[in-house]
Image 1: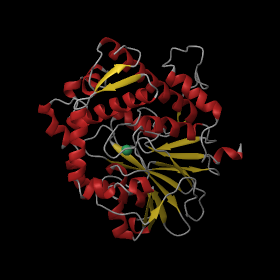
Image 2: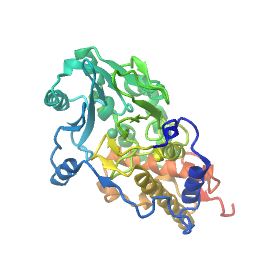
Image 3: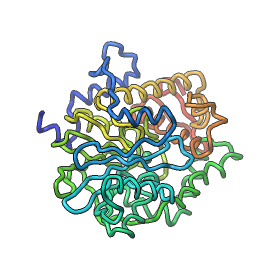
Image 4: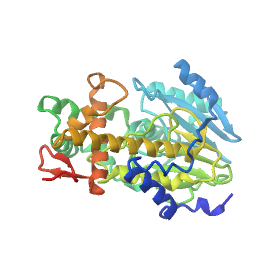
Length: 390
Ligand SMILES: [Zn+2]
Ligand SMILES: [Zn+2]
């Protein structure tokens, strides 16, 4: 094992950058530059989880390694079905990575899972949150109230808490402008703008006690757990890597089956897809045997999976360029409608339509950053291929 690979808290090496540039800038036209892991596929190591997924049931609580447990916590009415909370045994008590939604069902599953692992909710000493989405952070406050645990979060996500869950008027105003600029039809605007407000009830607002800095070792006796900042899905998203156990807890950053939503949002960095691709490179070469994601199932083949995800985004970028060649001056909304999604557009619920618009915008912004696309006007902004004459 190359020890230095765990010192990844530096810009990705030149070779990886070139690799990414060939894939994404070339939009796969460069058939002579296959991904370094071409032909390799991921191996699902969480076979019981995968079996449960196929049967549509909750997977079992599992001992993943000595002193490390995986606890599925259900998410109500959501295609993700559950979040996988990881419980790490300490000399005294337990630390958990992510917490689950703030519902009674989720709470009972978390308590039940900890009991199955031989502990209880009052044993929790620390809650390490990969990012502030409600399926990960929602229950953190309730766990702290019950057990006195400390909550840890990256500063970029901690900075968004007030605006996201307390003083939301400003957020709603800015989101409405963003949607209008994206060309969302007037009749759809109110529904799309309010789409995530009901989710607020699923979160207990809890400021973190500890801020997670990139590259820092988390203070957990008996564990070598490094925090790796991976902005993209959320500005303050983090993964946790253990060198001695050769594993990565990847949160939503790298999942085995789906790609996380990477969208332009009022609480995002300006170029979230660019950040995400860089963050993928940051963990690409980690010497780990197994990835422990926050959804779906455990797997091996981190680099191969990342190559698949990069290829997916390269295909999306190419699809947007093709749409713009056919329909110069299209809005982000029109482009979103022209792309293919997991189901027909009219069957996509409002909050997911909004996420789809944000995701389309994230691809457009990356293309703009690389001078492939230019923007014209505002409210709504219209897009053209940069190669088209004005
Ligand atoms: Zn998330
Ligand atoms: Zn999630």
